[in-house]
Length: 225
Image 1: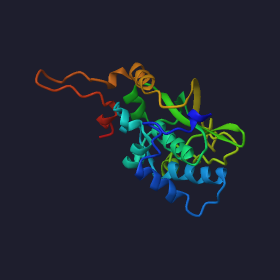
Image 2 (image 1 turned 45 degrees about the horizontal axis):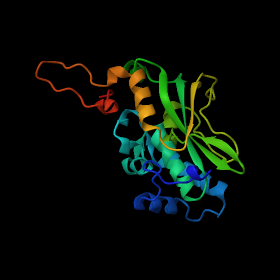
Image 3 (image 1 turned 120 degrees about the horizontal axis):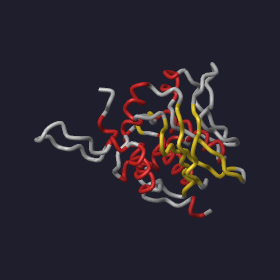
Image 4 (image 1 turned 180 degrees about the vertical axis):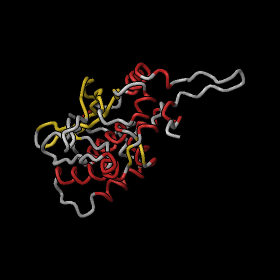
């Protein structure tokens, strides 16, 4: 279990800014692991906005401290941020990865990805009360309100994963492939999986003989503009 408590280059809860942020979130929260995790979950979910377009292949962008610093990121760094905060208070954590189909994806996003399947969706598993439970702090409340779906809560006792259906009965999120859990961010595995799924986003073709090729930062292309 010790490996699920250690700081790493990704679960970098020993960074001063991150340590200060964790302490601030826990002010006034009872000295109880579940209550503290619940507070940290809400802080990660709602204070860091979800934005899949900011994905980059630089290793540092997968870290907890970078997620906090950037203020917006996608599911993996948000999960890592919660996992790092959990480790800092003595709660073991491990990163889970899965492929999901989002039935409520925007047409623009599907057109850009050329797929409605999202490879390498990240969530976090936390060891509480003698068992592992899943938490998914990806979608912030404001985004959920725009999508007209209920934001995911986490009680520290039961798995909190994306709903299969919305409140109105529409298909929402379908988990189609489980990649397992990891004691640290499997950076090469994630990048290889994203590249295999969305190769067209890496090094797009040049528009002319004198144009420069994009660097391998596919989500920096901001396709909504």
